[in-house]
Image (cartoon, rainbow, N blue to C red; front, top):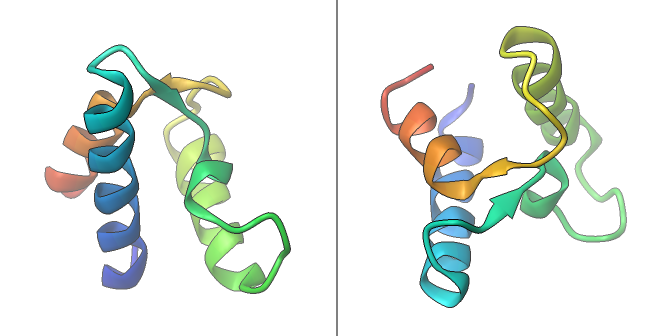
Length: 72
């Protein structure tokens, strides 16, 4: 996963956790604007989320952040 996406995921997770607490869930769509302005990055996130890790649609932001920080 490229550094740009790692940084974005960690930043968004931190904001969500700060606003709603440790139990807040996210999907990979949370890291992108409503319009598809970066399809390559969106697909990279989708492949990481769905194909590589076989995650459910919503996962706790805390879990995603920890996975990204560990380099998974």
